[in-house]
Image (tube, rainbow, N blue to C red):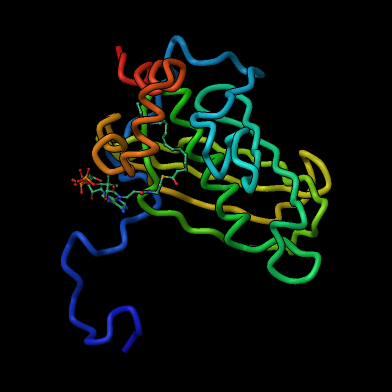
Length: 206
Ligand SMILES: CCCCC/C=C\C/C=C\C/C=C\C/C=C\CCCC(=O)SCCNC(=O)CCNC(=O)[C@H](O)C(C)(C)COP(=O)(O)OP(=O)(O)OC[C@H]1O[C@@H](n2cnc3c(N)ncnc32)[C@H](O)[C@@H]1OP(=O)(O)O
């Protein structure tokens, strides 16, 4: 018996773990014609975001850059605030860096998507002060499901892989945030024309 499923009864379909590989009939991701050009920085999707926001003092301040096709690269510098063990990055923080990098792939397709499932492999410890060089790309799209994969390297952009992750993101509308976010932050975001423009830009899909 597992702690997560104490009675060992079959899980209902909605609770079953979804595969991280695209199904046979998945399609290739399409780069939006107005996506940032390869080499262009993506900027933060929300200033208060823990992953990428510039106004978030406790955040990772991850900066992502558009790649070729539907791919991105990103850098994250491990700070003392990100420790789990003495001098080493916390695994959850590294997973956040992977999640954020994978999440930023939506910019290239002009699709808003949230993480549905994310699985991380930790291959090497990552010391404080390390620059983690991340790369992510979409492996397939099936309806609203976006399959993607990412690696994080240490010792340079071509260094050894310290962490990797596979994910399924689910496409949502901007209403996902408006309906579910705390009123205080939603009202502030909606009062910020730049934030509204950034969020709405995603909905003008061809
Ligand atoms: C103007 C103010 C607005 C401000 C907004 C600001 C900025 C917006 C712009 C960009 C921001 C975008 C993203 C953020 C980017 C990076 C941050 C990092 C990413 C994150 O950190 S993000 C937070 C963590 N994330 C969540 O907070 C999700 C919680 N969750 C839910 O909100 C629902 O659960 C949802 C919506 C996922 C689904 O709900 P739903 O009712 O819409 O869809 P439904 O259940 O019908 O599923 C449809 C198809 O997806 C499959 N499916 C469903 N769930 C799955 C799962 N978990 N794994 C694998 N597949 C799954 C089904 O199997 C079905 O597949 P099929 O079609 O084949 O049957």
